[in-house]
Image 1 (spheres, rainbow, N blue to C red):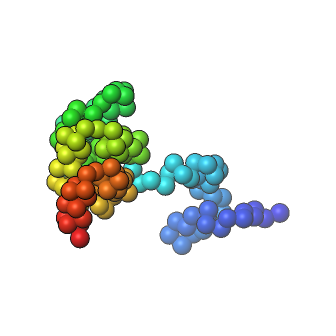
Image 2: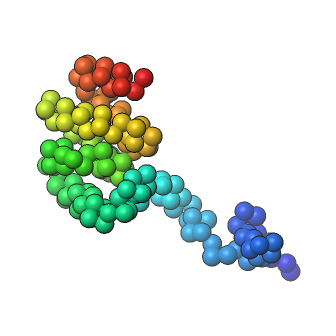
Image 3: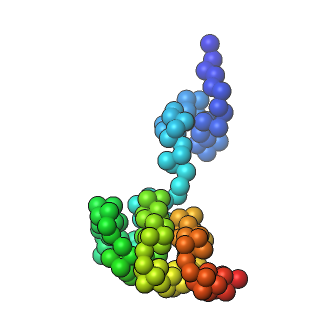
Length: 155
């Protein structure tokens, strides 16, 4: 009775030797629901920033503690994370939602801070899934002049 598996992509080839038994099966194959958690290429630290961040432990440490702060403090604002806004926006889904929420609920001053931060890291935000949500947030909740300035910068 030969071993038959319905998903041939589960077989691993080491050199030219097919390994009949699926090599340590990727967890996502066993748990279809796990796939969605494995799709984003983001861990706690933004992958795109990790070249700069990874090389400075103090910086990644600072990002981690800022993320922790944002999660623990429902009343946190963009003023609390000034200087870290683009990094937080790109970190993961919940921190990206936090930024959008602050753009929506914040004062004009807070929105302007978000806007300045976005313009300072426009390339990184634009090319990043979560970062992009921050730019969308400005288009959604920002003043007309903010939207115009963002449009002019992007296009």
